[in-house]
Image (cartoon, rainbow, N blue to C red; front, side, top):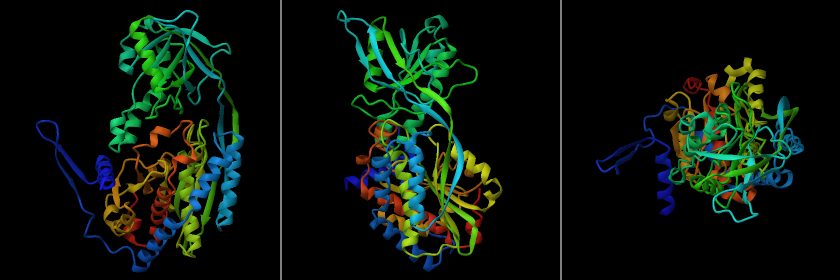
Length: 493
């Protein structure tokens, strides 16, 4: 019963078929969940629905996806673009897709090569300090960060919560100092199932904080780590340097250390020594891995299932996004194992460089620009491996009615929700913009951002059963495009 209540809450918090009102005291007045549509067009034949059921059951029973993510995370490890591990992962996934009978291509893409260096920080002056002591600060550099001098920088710390608070400060109160943005990740919002929304609210400080601080004359910028991690674990991720601001060193401190600094700054002067020595090396040649099961009747029409192969370097990239690559590979594996003959080409894509540039998806959009009208649908899994609740959909709203029979099948593993979304994935965004119907699994996000982009993104965070449930959603969603009907063709938005 507890599990049912929790997952119902997650579904409602995602805004799926709901109306949510507040009474005069601010408490929820009513919650209504709309049932699955009943008046649906006849799109899927009984044979296709039977095949979808077989696909679902085969994926739920298979450990193939788990074995793939285990190898990517444990045997190969962190796969930051430009690294030897990223190159090894390309080779591994290509060989695995060939082994299950896919036609494999490696499509070239030039990717950035940023390398993490030394990253240390300490408070060297602060109120109440014992003589000849310092206070260690746990942090990591943000992706694309420039370096401090090798010996580091030592400067006063200014702590603010928001961009507006920083802008309200006189420039001379910021110039020459280290700015800390202490904007917290909303753990309560995440606990209610809206981890992605909580992340979106806080991550703007990672992206835009360094340039905002630099415009005020700061010489370095730190942010409070974006996520729910405790135990002094810092959270990395890409920053964005604006063209109109100097590039200054940028890092993320743990939530605990952010609280420490803020408390001390309230009491008086706080001075920090900061050492960050990352390097941006010349771009490196890499590849998107493409694995096709050619369509028997319409091979030119493509159904994309995908995840991104690169990862950040603090952990081993299990949930972000080894899991997404693995469940996409499983979709192809199941279809091949069942000897199904899809009418359209099912294309597995392991994208390169989602984390720090999206070069892979941008290159794919250029290389396949003339074929976008024949891309029938695109799916990306990049939300970890938590229990799936259903499908996010970016497309014609009528798709919900058309896919009701598919949702009924997915509901057998608790994944029958259909939610119209504004966006389904960073790597498939160019296809979304071209009007291709896009999909992604709705996944339990309550704990994902405890580990995302941290040293704790490791294989043990994946529950094999839940990974298989995600595989079933992805495989069914990929194979459901079998029927060649005017209704499905009209789903382009």
